[in-house]
Length: 286
Image (tube, rainbow, N blue to C red):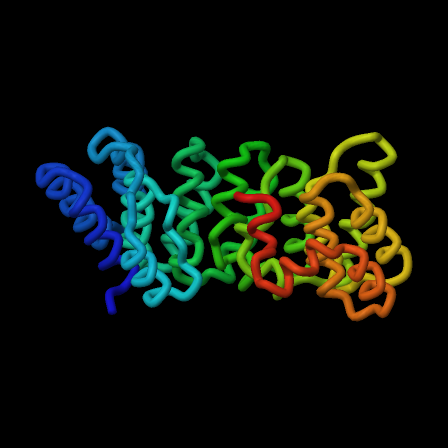
């Protein structure tokens, strides 16, 4: 089984020219011996021009190797420049203190593409618990791609965020029009506070006559009771098939007797649930 560094180098060797790989290997050698971050900053800046910005185009076997090397690591949407920048950061990370200082500074000054690499690589860096505040900075901005580098297909939030930061991340995803299904651990880290936040959000949107993504009910279902059941009953009566599907999935996750009674009225959705053909990823495709 290869390490993340081994895998990144192997994938890049298949996608870039021999000349580009030779340049990258030279830069990685400098970074392993670097005492300051000057070479790191230069390397990160030159990578797009030297290696390009195409998709990494990983196979199912590559993704399985990634998950074996680091559980939860999902580089399925990474580009060549993201992979090369993360590889450069890993080469520099041998000196943990220097890496942490450089990482914090880079997060403050990065352009969008650099920020995506900085945050997508979070599960691979040393001392991940010391990078939580920087990960939070990635969530605070208004650039959706940067937010999703932290939140989507990334095990870091599930493993490192406390409940408050986790809940704020899920809520922020709704505000910026992002989807919830690519958030790793969404079901494992569901909690009663988040369920209430989702219902309050729904009521605000309903009052303003605005649409609500059916995905929010995924965070409500396991804790639905009382007025939350009433909200799910309202969604179950919708003329929108996506909303009815979401209601069925959420009601199934609830242990409340009233939920079972409402579910009986969703004949088609209940049949799909029993057949295993109705899943959250089908309700709102990412």
